[in-house]
Image 1 (tube, rainbow, N blue to C red):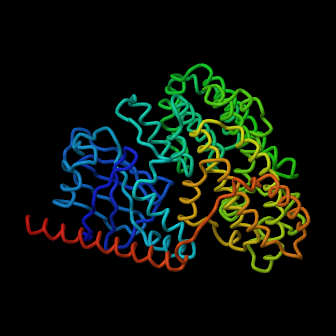
Image 2 (cartoon, rainbow, N blue to C red):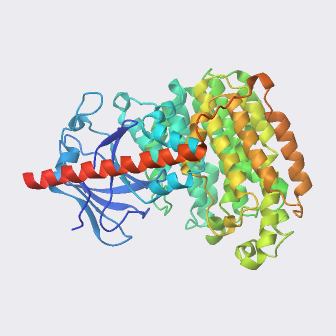
Image 3 (tube, rainbow, N blue to C red):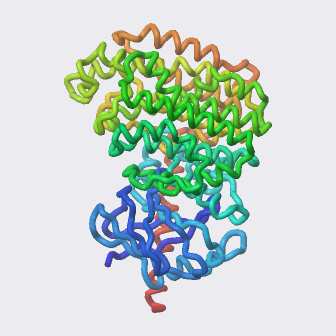
Length: 536
């Protein structure tokens, strides 16, 4: 049996998780994990948000042992005996309750990895990111992930929020921060479209079966028992347990149901259309992105207006709402070049890539690097033309929770585009922004002035990378000039920044604090573990 460090218990966003590692190294396998928790068997599913697994908490259980086995090493990673009993016994929570009463909730197991240390190292040149990482970890997450009252929810609604956290890469936190009944409507909207998207993505479903499913998917919302258990996709649980999602859909107010059903219908038909043809022209790229993401922006805008948290004009202006979705989708398609081509998916438009290569897959070859970067920069430039619409859309929003929900993904997208522009790593792996960078954006993008400043900052970063020899140079410079004009702030509202300490000094101090914190946490955990062993 593997030895483990004794974990400390944490509670965040009404879910319980604990950090841990074994002498076999960190767990990184994203396949379902066989779990025995409290004497019962489970399949714990990896959450796409971080290296975390989620499984049900055993009801009426004051303590439990946890056994995990991963297919990555074939070796057991276990917490048993006193260590497990202490983790799951009646440990005081910050609100004075005890973990033993925290039933029908979820255990979130976070497998620690060296990336937590690397996150700090990557942000050394950006001291504000290190500060925000600590601030976020010490409670700043509450500004974007407020505490939800899961106990007041029906069992089916709690299950929907579990699926939301399992399947959403970036939207789970901001969805759960929305105000009032809009939160549930957007949660169900997301899960319905995630189920639809899972059907589209599943390459094991034959076309003669998939096309009718996509076209008819909106009708399944009103069929109590419809489900699909043959999917092999990572998010297959939203199809296998679709009756739970459709039940909560039917519990929504009529105005929300009408929007969700309509968007699901139009999106399903659009997906079916593009299953049987390639994304050829740039206009077809816009159309495909409209079907899979622009319609999401339109549907969300209609939900915002239906909730009366935003003005009717927000829901009526479909052009701006469509641009919001297209900007996010194009960013994802650009970033995911390698992942998509490796599994036979092609979303880069042929009109663009055929100018530089005979086959889309050629860009992954080292000898095609310059051509690959030229095509990449062309597509980034095309995506950037939606940014003025993004600024116009966000400037109309009045509700804080809706603004955060809309603004955070958009600033993440422009930061990602800045990282991708002219970057050969797009053709060798997945380009990601730093974790400290992401946290900083999440915490800062809470008002229009801040968003304009962020957009201006990353636009200037892209400007610095524009090559004299790039074929799209003139178009890139033009759209960046437009973005600069649209994102400009009046002089009176420009943020003043005063540095009282050298950035390098602040970075060193933050790193020292991080290492000290990690050392003290480890020492305390080891001391606690030694005490437990003596007590056995």
